[in-house]
Image (cartoon, rainbow over all chains, first blue to last red; front, side, top):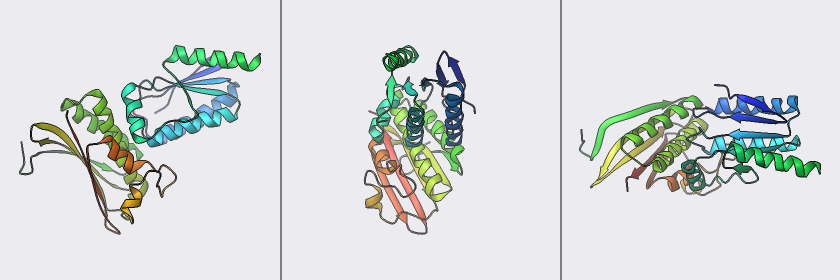
Length: 121
Length: 140
């Protein structure tokens, strides 16, 4: 299953679907990082609104994606973590430390716009 | 239909052979939780617990099975999930139940995390024979 990645200005928006296997997630990780390099993106929004479960593997992979992209000099923000999913993650002990999160796509874009403005000024 | 142990005889069995099966198992578990009218929040906790248990099977035992069934605790309906494998077994269960312990690449949250997600937790493991984890969640 492929994760669609859209280019929006200097940002990328990736919408993660519900039924991704571990292999799908790892494939998505390499596809996204290559895309970030190719498009010289300054920011990435990972939309996980459709994800009904974020277990240890998915959380770890998303965190790794965010850290890798940061090493490329771009910023990642995770948007749309469902309240039930957030509750389950905290119970499991998954805190996504060091990863930016925002309520939805709009707030995610605002966050990235703000970051790129403060970075250039 | 209610069996002698007060559990439903209809049992969903998902054999776990690869990471694809993890997704199938948690989808089946969520479907049953929703059918039993668990809240969306509890259904997510149940699906997440199944995901972690199935992941343990893939990581440590290579193959095994997830069994899901409804149950009754007095007036309270609930769900029982059994994760079994015939893998190498866990040498030190006390250590495996401690947060941060992992022998297969730093996830280390599996079992203690699952215990926090569910109401009841039981583990039986014998070296060279395999591991059976039984977890239960009861409706409020």
